[in-house]
Image (tube, rainbow, N blue to C red; front, top):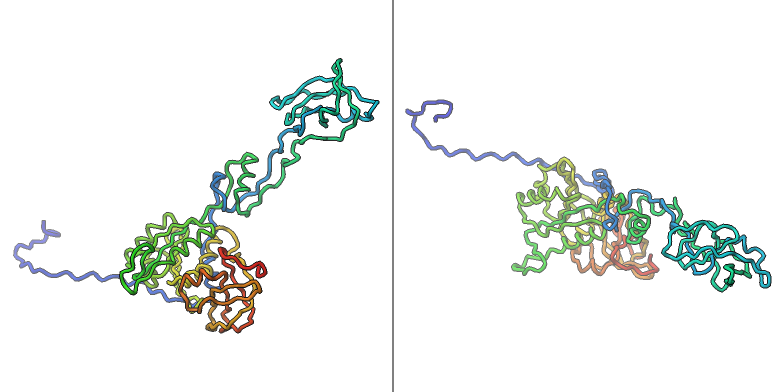
Amino acid sequence: MALFGRNTSNVDVVDVEPEAPVAAPAPVVVPTRRSLEEEREFLLRRVNALRPFGMQIWDVPGLVLCEDIVSDLDLPLVTTTRIAGWGVRGSDLVGARPGDPRRLFLVDSISVSDGVSRPLVAGAVIEIEKGAIVPDGVDAVLPPSAGTLAADGYVDFETETRLYQNLRRAGSELADGTPLLRAGEVLTPRSVAVLAEVGLDKVLARPRPRIVVFTVGETLVAPGRPLTAPQQRYDAATALLTSAARADGATVYPLGIVESSPEVVRQTIADQQIRADLIVVVGGGDLVRDAVASLGEVDEAEVAINGEARVTYAGLGAERTPLLSLPSGVVSSYVAYHALVRPVINKLNDVDPLGAPRVQARLADRLESSEGITHFVPGVLDAEGVVRAVAGTDSELAWDLARANVLALIPEHWGGAEPGSLLECLVLDDAHTPPAAR
């Protein structure tokens, strides 16, 4: 059928090669230069703490509690005896002494398997097993040797007793209304046991942030595979950031190395959004920026850390799932993790974004740095409070990080640090600093 009913029977058909479609120009993103504090503030404004929900108690160790827990029962629930012996009313034995006993009539024998028995009346005594429930009226239990059972059913006592002697009173260990756990605490196996002890099987907690981590790089090779070209190197950054994020309380999905292709990177990011609260990409530069340009809000910044790091942020989809693209290199990505990613994870966890432990230390040797840029230098802090850099500010070896126990911070306005300078040091959580330096 002719298109639009046009008669083409007398028209010569000429093959015309169609013009190639013209691709729409990619939006231009102009990097903004920001200080470390400005970039961190920018990112923290774009994330919120994850919403808490009720979870089974065995799933919550390491999570942040989002409600106050108060005991609604007494422990023990009932008063029991600590020993086997005679259950008495203490007032019945007032004045008892050798040669002048007090005689009480034996009315009952209670075993540990019995329920609550009849109240004890004045002038009576019961025989009771260790651990048995004490009936009302009994306010002390004496050992068997304290009483002598006579043939007529009476028991003679030649000693007085203290109030509540040998009793484990109801609520004496944990009383109804006792505060147990506070909102904001990180739950531990011990606090889980407390929840179970008061009968709770669920608790309101904030879930672990779900983080997807992958690296983009043409010359990278996954550990365990052979290097086939001299320019290749193993990908250590994915393993490093995955381990660091897990140590900070996140559930991490490491993807390893993703092909340096805009289509592959874009599809990978689109596929991972459904299970991520944060996506962290190492390397890729402009490729990652262009790949996310159509997926949401995009910001690119030159951040003044360790020689200026290009950092791309994207708020993906309707949920504005945050994506952070970090500079390549093991040390550079690790510094960017501590400076920018970790505060975001802490915000998702609703804990202090800058809560990492820090100490003051004296610098052993001069360190070069550029004015206007904050430098994080891997260093070793000794017991005398002196820090020494393990490598230069341009090092990218994981080996240098492995030897370090701190990241020494050279402020942006210094332009270098002289020996003896007092530096703030970020303590690496998995490292052990000497006791004197804490």
